[in-house]
Length: 264
Image 1 (cartoon, helix red, strand yellow):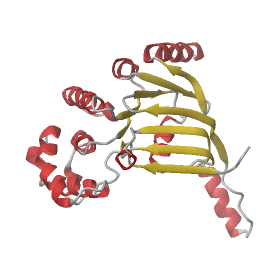
Image 2 (cartoon, rainbow, N blue to C red):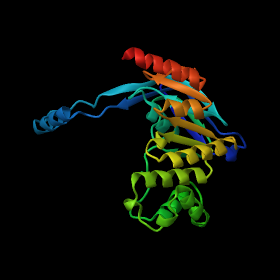
Image 3 (cartoon, rainbow, N blue to C red):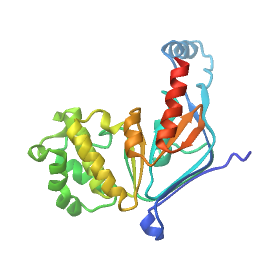
Image 4 (tube, rainbow, N blue to C red):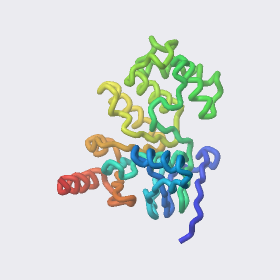
């Protein structure tokens, strides 16, 4: 098997084509974190002038292949440690495949690590501008959007407040509002509605429906199977680094629930 790997990314608007995600025989080897006991051993080896062994690694994916086309709302389900969130990070480009090829056609907005791209010392408005500039918009374009973004997030009163004083719910609403207002071609969500209030979650779902009516892609990692069944047009069940099932959300969720119940 070839050991070469590539990761290709381009805005769909630049090609005149629709947004698309494709994994072609993707394998990813992931280094595991050392446990505390192992870290103590590393220090002891250093004191004794012994070379420490390389950190352990494991194959998270082996020959993973699938594609997602414009207009699809895909729910990713699976147990803890199955690699669901890592899948989104591979789409974004945080992790490059060890083997295989990842193709992403479209401007990506990822709500994965909540607020990780924010400067906590800056105000809500300033972070709106910063986030947009990182996505390729001009500061003036983002300042023109700022009030609309704040109002959708229910934060019109807090635009001048440094985000370090925002609650987790406020931060979630602001991050989501920015990410969806800048009209992404591909929207990636990792358990994003778990921390929000019910009223905002409903508005957020409605906004994503509107985005998808414009032929965008949404990929959602969630343990909330009701959300996957109701909102998604397709579901992928990840198990042991491969696709256990790919199909209609109701069917995939039913089989996943059955398997989880049998494991006890």
